[in-house]
Image (cartoon, rainbow, N blue to C red; front, side, top):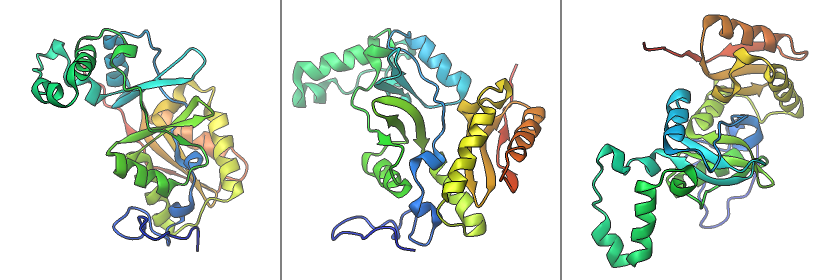
Length: 255
């Protein structure tokens, strides 16, 4: 299977990369593996609102969006580790002053002392479109040393792709040596997601769906065995689905 020509000097995903030309995942698109909908916060959310959202949902980053869903920035664990509330000391002041001057020092102060999401978020966010190839996202994560990228449709956030999503796609491919998703598989994924969209027990922001050769793969977390069973029944009820494989894990509640 040939999907592209590797230009001279470009990184070949077949060499020390998670996806090779022999993998169906090599030709998958972002829309086939992204988690959607996405948990987000508004620019006026407090730092504690952001922290609680991340903790409650088991995520390490939170897109900050306008009331129209337009991406404004991203708050990640890295934006929170130097917070003054946890007693973090500023070891970077001397070198920031040397290379960036007062502007950089001011930016660092806002991040460590700001009280709203718009003050602590990273504004220059690496993003991808729905039609981007998965192998390109893998390269992008490696190049920028990041763990996830928001997925945009125009300037609105419609999904997110993390390293975990890439591994899930690879696992789904290699289990049966599957090929790139057909149009039918993409239609099935859309129908499964549409079926789950209005079900409160589906907890879609914590669930990912990958469809290959009519087989629905569930990844992510579920809150109960009953929810896991309901997910199976929902997928099997979609015409065209030939099987359902569950890879989810159950959320453990600590009192």
